[in-house]
Amino acid sequence: MTRYYKAVLLRGALPSLILSLASPALADHTGPTGVGSSGGAIDVQGPETLEAGHFAIGQQSTLNLPQDRSDAELATLAGQHIHAHNADYTLNAAFGTAYGVTDRLTISAELPYIRRDGLREGEHSHSGGVTTNAVVPLGSVTGFGDASLLAKYSLAGGLLALIGGVKVPTGGTHSQTPSGERLETEHQPGTGSWDPIAGAALGVPLGWAKLDASAVYQFAGKGAQTTRLGDRLQAGVALSHRMGPPAHQHDEGEHKHHHASWDLFASTTVEWEGRQTVAGAVERESGGTTVWLTPGVRYNSAAEFSLAAAVGVPLWQDIRASHPDNRLRLIVSLGRGF
Image (cartoon, rainbow, N blue to C red):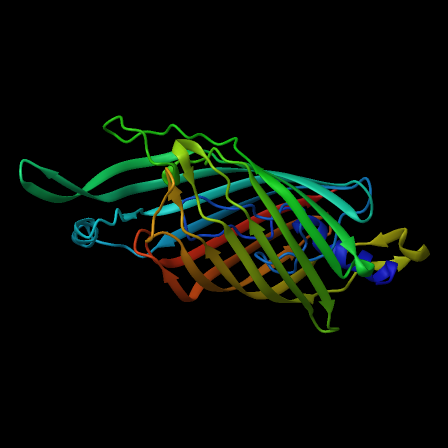
């Protein structure tokens, strides 16, 4: 990849380097949003890295809307000894920063804030010879989640990058129900576990567009209340098209005049989550898979700001009964490169 072409890519990518890999929406806990990535789409990472000494900041909000399940449905599942739950929505507002250590190595940090309202769960009980299946309101859950520390290293002339890092147990794990009982770990803002993260990103210029592909895997560690949430995988491909003139070249890329531009993008991603275990017992009805289609648009200002919005629609999903199916995902991100 030539120096000028890389500069043009980074011109559009810098403002959006912070948050371009949307968090998995399958479970109550979300994975890293890819701070320091630069894919053309909002939920697929590209291989580009920040130039040495440059940094970026950003914020991304993801609103996950599940399919609604009635109290009768939850009670029926409770009768089958499946503690299924539902919520009105889950909001993940992630804040992050990234820094170019060298032209090939970018490190980043991200901290999410989680809010979940209308949480309720089916409960099966047996007392005095009487079996009861009921729905228990669990209230709202808010708080900072687990931070993620990531590194991206560019290879193959900037067309390929390796990604590695760790999710740190900074989030709260002691939120309670309205009756004062501690919520299960899967409903907490944090997990209490250290989770290694590994992945890779590929980018190929097509002339009229750019093709990105990435895969990120999160290995679940043992967390609070002897709970190990399932491993997670997010992989996808994306196409993006730039509308507007590129940076004007002077003196081999040292001095460029930036123009405002628009990016149109669309991605297809697969999100998979394994089953969780509690005290060594595997919850057979947890985990599942969703395939998302996510079109969107990004505005890149001449002042290195970027604003993007996208809508995710599930094309196919196989979610086990403890979690509701996904209905819709709305993503808005704002970034600034320096």
